[in-house]
View 1 (tube, rainbow, N blue to C red):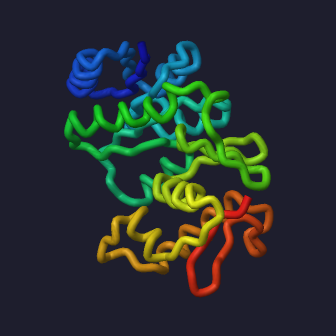
View 2 (view 1 turned 90 degrees about the horizontal axis):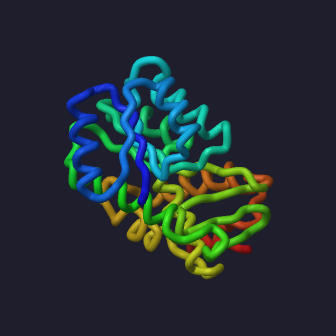
Length: 227
């Protein structure tokens, strides 16, 4: 049975989360402040953590930062009433796996929980098919990346972009195809957005981002991933 740790100081919300998660068959622990939540995460090693950002003691960012610095890779789903893009970016940079803004649909939250557990908990790591390039190991099942043995947290859009390149196995992919697959061809998204995200991937995964050896530009075509 998967065990979920909920770190949430609003008693009504915490009660509702516990009830709905237990109905789905999960074992649930609930704590109301950051320091206790961090201690519980260290001692119980849950399969997933639901973490509110605005909690007493240690705030959610500090809890997440401490866990990742200690090497804990438990998936973390952030809850926050703050919907600003900067807050989301900070959460993903610190190693969050997903981000849900309050108020939220319980069905949506349960769907996110199931997706995170499916990515990380059902296939043993040694049995997963991984993709390697340079000193980078990409695990598509877990949606995780390691470089030189160290976990590299990627925001969901960067991860989806990397996976879109990886599954082509070196075949060039046009910017338009990447936009369609990763962004859904939303009108507000321009092809330059792909270039910006590629640049971020190179910074995180290439030895020399200015002279990439793996995430390559294909002239007048798009990009490809070379092993």
